[in-house]
View 1 (tube, rainbow, N blue to C red):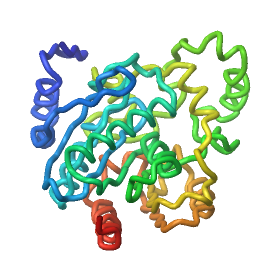
View 2 (cartoon, rainbow, N blue to C red; view 1 turned 90 degrees about the vertical axis):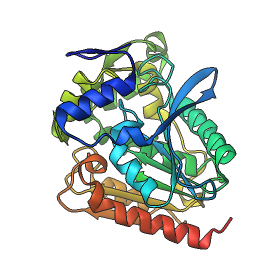
View 3 (cartoon, rainbow, N blue to C red; view 1 turned 90 degrees about the horizontal axis):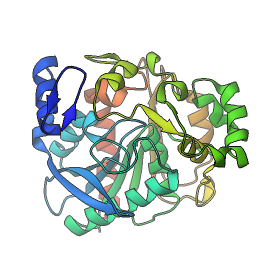
Length: 316
């Protein structure tokens, strides 16, 4: 049973049908098969688009607070371009099990590893990770851990141990002091406490079609995460990559809009310049943090071109 502010639905599909009809966007969710994968005893929800058993697979990781089908248009069009797609709702997100908004980066990486296992088992070994915002960070972190993947595509990325990451939060100066506090004994005592997601990220500044901005979307969507745990913030403030950025060998594509109010272009460029692997960075003019839902047709050709080049070289 899924209860929104306006109506109650028996299933998530019923909710998606209602929203598509009410707001007038295409019902892309009908093209995906629902499946599950287990991770640390939790049942995680997957949205799967099967193009061809022999085609490469894109494992997709959504951003903070939201879930894979929030990117249904992008995922569907990637499938139409010739790829299998496996969209993951990480633990505590979307239709997956787990305490809402309570996770660590390491736990989410376990979820991704299990989803990669699923993709390889169902399709083949040709797997690329793709992520948006926090999902982009996770894809980047996986590039430093799991060399089974052929490439990663990141809308934004970060090194969570760097002092500069405080500027990615809504209140950088406050988060800098919070980072010191929650990283110590005091943080352990309140690790299960929850704070509003809107206190962590400036959601009003991110425009979203049909809803106005991302805060309005999250407040109205019954599957969106409203709060984040102190334990999750601890992890977001201290988790290190498995290897130095300069030693990452998995090819990395990163992109963002120049109107992104969370990730400054200069921050992304600073990390990109440390990469010694095959890489590509694209900055799209006049696009916001929500470009993966707002500007699909503008950015899709570059993503498909990168994937085509990757699989032209890596013929497994």
